[in-house]
Length: 75
Image 1 (cartoon, rainbow, N blue to C red):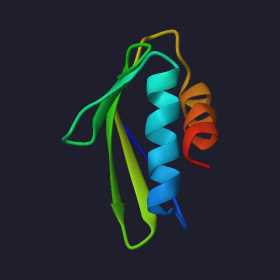
Image 2 (cartoon, helix red, strand yellow; image 1 turned 180 degrees about the horizontal axis):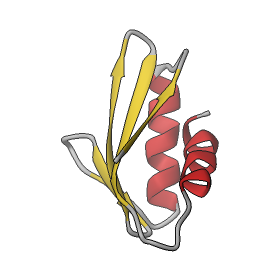
Image 3 (tube, rainbow, N blue to C red; image 1 turned 60 degrees about the vertical axis):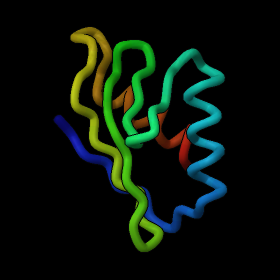
Image 4 (cartoon, one colour; image 1 turned 90 degrees about the vertical axis):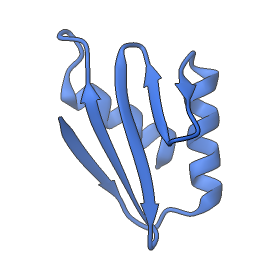
């Protein structure tokens, strides 16, 4: 399990990130959990800081690749 923090995040960025996950074949659930290409996690926005927790990932997917995709989706 790993956590990633992204600062200065607005509701619009969250909406854009959710849309990006869905547009790329993922699913986002009402409890703020998601799954995309075998990567499972959840996210929480508090005081402009987005905390994304990755709970599961495929063995062949690197943590670096996950981090870069999260930046693309929510950056």
